[in-house]
Image (cartoon, rainbow, N blue to C red; front, top):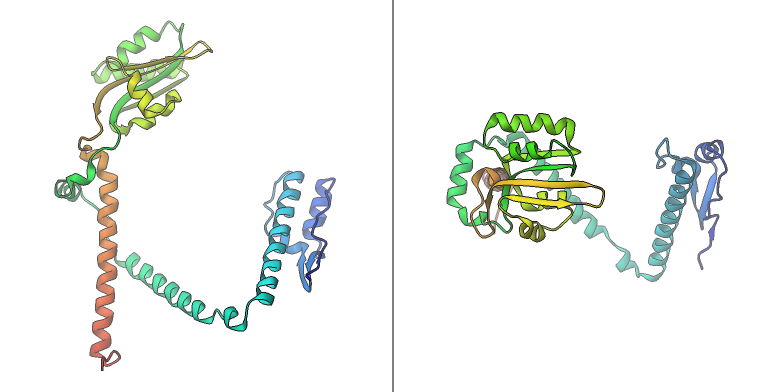
Length: 280
């Protein structure tokens, strides 16, 4: 039978009591012969927490600490010596960890993370089928404004313009008149990004799109609207500029794998040449 003493931490009435609890190096909990000290808990309580939050976090830590020890005690009592022998697993883990750490060191010292636009284009053309859209992507300008704002008609006109000066004017007017103004007209975004601004899913947002506009009034007298000048539908190829971040990650990942593969081959080759690796 395992006895647990002093697991419940009493509620503390003030910040002073919290401080004394955290920094007084006395035993606050015991599980059999194993003791937990107040100084141990002080290391896991962030400074600046409210007293009630400090107490709650301390209680959680104590209960977790006790649970771990209780489980360990039960395991040691119920498992055979053979079952308790984890030396093989620890050694395998140690070897895997050391191998991984050296691979990371080797790769970090040699990895070229620069990916040119030309490399991106080459990869895109060679693997275009990987970049079929699962959801539409679009360019958009979004606005949330009072529905009775006198600037609303002008803003709608400017938002739908393709002239750079009009877009700049829309930015300027929206800055002082709108509650929120977002412009994604210079880059492609997933339709789900725009849908979140309307509090709907992307399918609903797509169904709301009429003549390039999505409009939604709320009960507070505001209106959210978005102008979508361009969109590429699901099932079509994603534009290369939209796929570029993913492509760069893929290229860098391939470079990492190549470095690791080369490392393994070189190490085996050196071991054979040095007589360290011999197959009988």
